[in-house]
Length: 149
Image 1 (cartoon, rainbow, N blue to C red):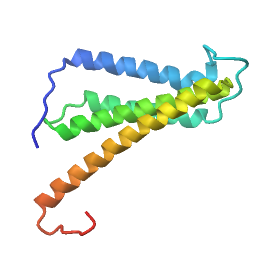
Image 2: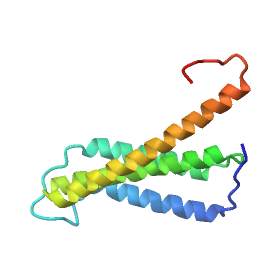
Image 3: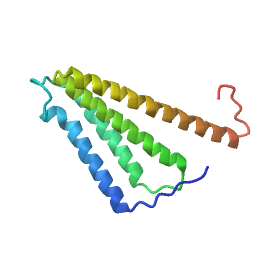
């Protein structure tokens, strides 16, 4: 496997991590401040604690991945992009939940459709990465001859 080395300055990585955390904190705490609004009076967002915890955990994992030094690897690079895709999907689900709380069916439908589309792309990417990792394990192990893989 050919490695990938990105010569991105550490300061730029820290700035990107800070921006990601600011966006995450705003989106994760949105159910408590609910502005700016879409239409009408908002109702309470039903999954606010779940969305808060999932956004913070996913953002933290991604930030740790981009700040951690690792050996050159296309697999690690692709894994970071997958985690970013999962974060983006979770942000879009938060948008969907907010649109639903504001009774905005147009934005809610758009958010749900877009989130499902992003999930599909990320899931395909994860499956491809999993299969490539299994191929490497199979090639390096003489005793691993499963007919299922």
